[in-house]
Structure formats: structure tokens, C-alpha cells
Image (cartoon, rainbow, N blue to C red; front, side, top):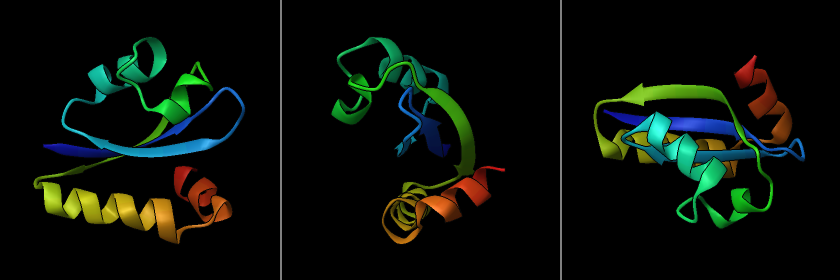
Length: 80
């Protein structure tokens, strides 16, 4: 199973990513050097949205759509 997720950072920005283990990845973003460089400077982060996919290809396409094609307003609408 693959997860596409959105985090809200301490500075109120949003970060979108993909993982196979959601809890582990959130822990990495919050307390490890394995977290994304973007989130390391904006801790703590909070999971605000996630979707499940059965294959990496579909998850990657969705991550790209959220990250690159959606505005912040559209992402906030998705979260609520």
C-alpha cells in the first residue's frame, strides 16, 4: 500500500509526500534527519490528509497532481 499525504508545518505551510509507511514517515519528518529538508526547518509537522493507493504509479501521479497542479487554496479545500 502507498500513501499520498499532506502535512501542515509549524509555519502553516503545506508539504505533500508519498510513502509506504505513514506513521514512520511522519516520525521521520518530526524527529530525524531522514525527514525532507523542507520539513526539517518547519517542525513540528502534523498530518492533515492522506489517501491510499495500491500501486506506486498511481500514488506518484496523485502526489504530482497535488504538489504541482493544485494551488494552496485547492489543497486547503481538499483537506477540509
